[in-house]
View 1 (cartoon, rainbow, N blue to C red):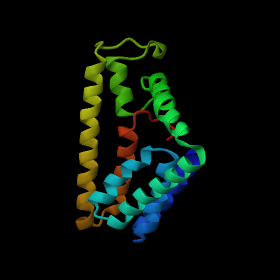
View 2: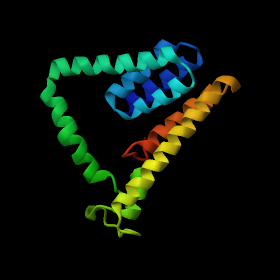
View 3: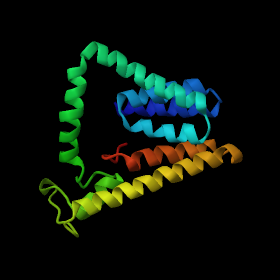
View 4: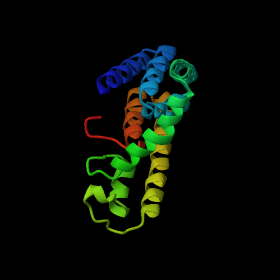
Length: 177
């Protein structure tokens, strides 16, 4: 799946830099339909004022998920959201290989026993608060870089910043991402 995501995001970046906003949005929307994390690139499209790309991303994401919903049924979506996502989060969010902001701060303030780590301070709520504040700052930084990119012509740098931001704000990010 990661090879597909890299392809879609790279193709989306290439389309964006060539001014093909709709194609860029469709490609990133397909990536987001495969894995939710690329939805963060909506920050880039919105703040870089690439409106057609932002709309194409949202429509593609919703259309692909609508087809999946029609084919698989609402029970599969409900099970994914209510069972799979929480189980994966519980198991891996404090794993030492998790490179996300949440992974780092939760290892310091409240690792799961299976992680085999001793917390610096046993206060998971504080760790999550710090991670969420930093997530907000990363989103703001990505938004600011994207906003300025239109004036400075640094769209490539803004897209790259958004991809890095996407990985940092995700609850779970592995090194091979």
